[in-house]
Image 1 (cartoon, rainbow, N blue to C red):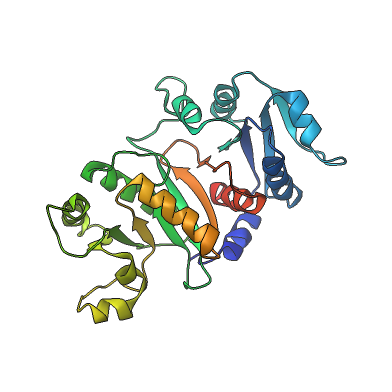
Image 2 (cartoon, rainbow, N blue to C red):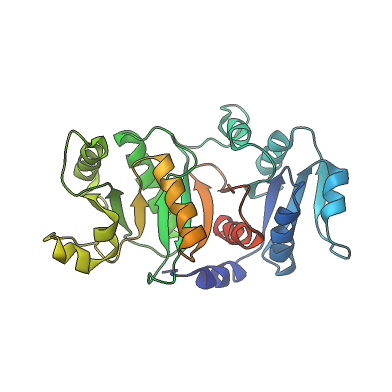
Length: 286
């Protein structure tokens, strides 16, 4: 089981290099991350967008990038994937909504199942393994059906990282079910529907999920407390704020990937630094 980004890096190094279609590559930080991955022999890159601007950002002496001038970089990148010329999609200087519209187009996109979801991956100096958080970037409305599809997508992805039975937590404010806190009601329904298929508990608060001692103090019995793998957050805002807070104040390393499409999608925040973008490339290459 992969428990750190260092182990993830080793896993990708041992695999055959894949080709990344980078949409709207006119960004020096993106080029820096792509250059690192390419120089390490982890991946090849096709850069779509304004070719003049992109060429000006590639460091002198760096070779190997294929640059395609494009006024519709998302659609052109997806065509390369359909043609077998690229293996995965990466977001550059393009609005997330615009990229997803191209991805979800029923005729020309990368739609596969019912739903895509974003997984943020956190490495904390205070936790013994990687922590996965969803959904902080794709699904704005989270109901029982969406959560069930998310669990399916995440389970399939985590198999690639050696997780045979990841522990899911339906994260809420408290562990009791109350009509006044709608996410607790949804959590109860999702757990009831999935508990015979996956390891999942909820409603569960973050302190209990992360600490067996906290569960004991609250008098709660939990099989996943202190060993949770996946935080299923009650809404996109909570997920997004948690990830950015852990990155900015918690000393955590972060990255992210979108799963559920015909090809992995590396979806980045514009504020991510080169190392975060590089780690996200590793997640996509898995």
